[in-house]
Amino acid sequence: MSDIKVIVDAKGNLENNLKGMKIREAYQIHGTEVLELIEKQQMYNSTQKQEIKALLSQANLTDSEIKKIVFGPEITTEGMKTKPLGKLMRDLHKELKIYNIDV
Image (tube, rainbow, N blue to C red; front, top):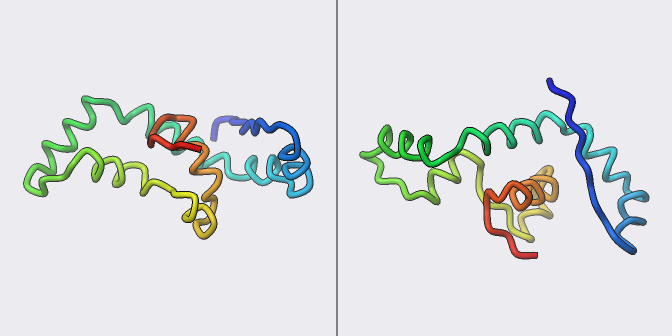
């Protein structure tokens, strides 16, 4: 695996939470998941999307459905609480502009 460092930026009281809960350390453990998502995002371009649509043309999938197949479902605020690595993955979805996430 390539060396990857997850940087968590926080201000104010959030910084205390990050330190107390050791979020940065926890995120570093999951570098493989982070790298996989980054690689998928880099490979998922308009050409790839059209190729996938062509291969699955009989299924009549929407762009949204294809995105869900490639990246997994969008993680909502509520979903973050129950999905393993939910916060990390939601942050990555936002940072990589995979899903339009409003904070």
